[in-house]
Every structure is written in structure tokens, then in C-alpha cells.
Image 1 (spheres, rainbow, N blue to C red):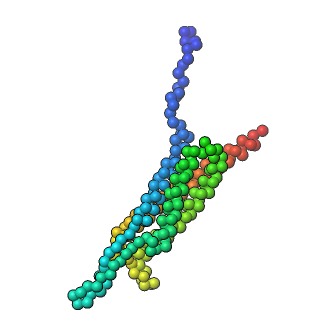
Image 2 (cartoon, rainbow, N blue to C red; image 1 turned 120 degrees about the horizontal axis):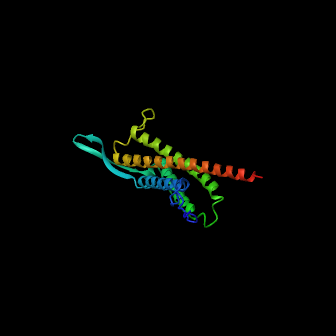
Image 3 (tube, helix red, strand yellow; image 1 turned 90 degrees about the horizontal axis):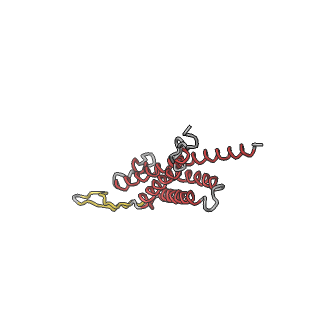
Length: 202
């Protein structure tokens, strides 16, 4: 009787982050990781160089030395690798900026489609750069006896080790970008489905 008119506290009225709120931060977090991975791959490969002197012949007691210089610019595949990973890191950085300003500039409606297309393009480019770099890395490590191409990683080990690290970072960035693309396409499909169902409601 005395409890009439008394407001009871609602159960679960505390402001806790919902599942949908947490899910909104999945893509930005993945993009940040992809940005860091591709940026690391770009910097490590772009700064990768080594100069060593190796003995090419011995005449009597005299050793004839030659200077071996290894630069990423000497291999077109590595140059392409640097370009596509640098482009991917710039792309992910710009997409992070767009994610946080799209509400202010009215980009919420059309941005997801454009972003999904750009993500697919960057996945294709980074995949091509990674494949080309891995092929040249394997050739430098093992050589090719059929084509009589000698291996060079036994002469410039540090160069090859840094190149391998750059390829691993690029692969991590590529995998993250594939996951980002899949999530973006699924979300875009869900939005289109909701839009179609809402327009068909009498």
C-alpha cells in the first residue's frame, strides 16, 4: 500500500557497452593493426641495405675481394613491394580518418560502398607485391640450379633477414585487410537487406 507511487529502479539500467557498440570498434582496431603492419613492412624494406666484401678468388697467398651491395632498389619486385605496402598503409590511415568524420560530412550513406571497393583493390595489390617479393626472396635464398642463378643470402645475410621480416609484416597486414574486407562486405549486405525489407513494408 505504501509502495504506491514509489519508482522502482529498473533492472540493468546501468550504462554498459552493448554488443553492437563493441562491434563498431572491431573494424577501426583491425584497420589500425593493418596500418601498423603495412607501415612496418614499407619502412623495413625501404631502409634495407647491406654492403659486404667477399673473396672471389685467391692467387697464391693473395685474396681478391669484391664489394657486394644489396639494395631493395636493385630488384623491381622489392620496389613494387614497397609501393603497394606504402599505398596500403596510407589507405588504412585515410579510412580511419573517414570513419571518425563521416557523420560530420554526410558520408555515412555512400562511404561503405566506396570503402569496400578500395579495400578489395588494396588487397589485390598487396597480395601481388607479397607474392613477387616472396618469389625473389626464395630465389635469393636458394638460387636456381636449372637457370644457373646463384643464391646471395649466404653473402648478405642481414639484408635477407630484414627482407624476410618485412614480408612477414606485409603478410600479417594482408590477412588483416582480407578480414576487414569480409566484414565490410557482410555489413554492407546486411544494410542492403534491411533497406529492402523496410521499403517492402506496407
